[in-house]
Length: 395
Image (tube, rainbow, N blue to C red; front, side, top):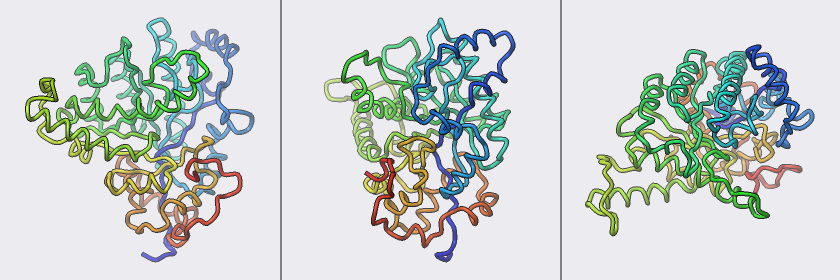
C-alpha cells in the first residue's frame, strides 16, 4: 500500500439518541399522557444536549457531515439522550426499581426502536447497541432477540451496583441471557458511566468520587465474567469494554492470572480456592473473548495496546461528547499514533471493529477514499494542540 492510501476509520464509541418529539412518536397512545407529564418535569442534565448542539444526536445529515469531515466513516452507537421516563441518560442512569420498571422498560424499548431506524438510514455505516435491563432476565432476552431481528449490532450491558436486588454479573442466573447472545452472535458491550456505581450520596466531594471510581465499577465487569467462568461456559460470547481506559488491562490480567494460579493450587492465601474450575488462564479468555473500545487514547494509553494485543483494541472518538476527539480526530491520531506501522493502525482504526460489530470494510472503502485520512497524513507527528481542543486525547 502507498502513503496516499486512506484509512477506513470506524469509531468504536459514539453516542446518539432521539429528541423528545421523535421518541413520542414511538410511544403507544396509552403512555402519551404520562410521557407529557414526565417531559414537563424533565430538566436537561447534559452540556452536549444544549441548544443546537443537541441535534447532533439525531440529525442524520448534520451527524454524517461532521463525522465525515473528521475522517470517520463508520460508528458504533451508544445511547446519549434521555429516553422516556428515565431520570437521566441511560449510560449513567441507575437501574430501575420495581416501582418504575414498567415505564422505564417502555422508554428503553422506544429508544431501541428509534435506534434501529436511525441505523437503517445509513446501512453499514452505523452499528447500534440495543439497551437492556437486568431486572427481569426474560424481558432482557426478549429485547436481545428483538435487537437481532431489527438489525442492531450488539447489546449494551449495564453494570450492576453492589448491594442491590439485581443479581451480580457473576451469577449463574444470567446464563440463559449469555446463551442467547452467543447463539445470535451479538457482542455485549459495557460502557463506562454511572451504571454499576454505588450511591455516593450528596456531599461536596461526590462528583470527585464519581469521576475517580466510575471506571473501576465498569472495569470489574471483566473479572466478574472471566473469573466466574462465563467464557468457559460460553466460548463464543464476546465482551467489549468501552471508554474505561486501557492501561489498566495488562496489570489486571496479571493479577487475575496470579489468582488463578493460587486457585489451581487449592488455596488463596488463608482462603480455600473458589469453586470455579477454569482450565485456561484469565488472560487466555481475554485474548479469545474480550475487546477494548479505547476512546480518545493519549500516547500513554496507546502504548499499552501492544501489551493488550493489537487485535483486541478498537479506537473511539466519543462523538459528540466534549471530552471526545471531534472535530480534531485526525490531530488526536497524529499525536498518539504517528510512529505506528500502517498494518497495526488499520487494525485499531477499523478492521477489529468491523470484525466485532459486522461492518463491511469493502463497502466502506469508497467513503474512506473520500473522507478518510491518508497513511502519510497520520504519520506526521503533532507539534501543537489545536486551538479550542478539549479532549483528554491532548492532555
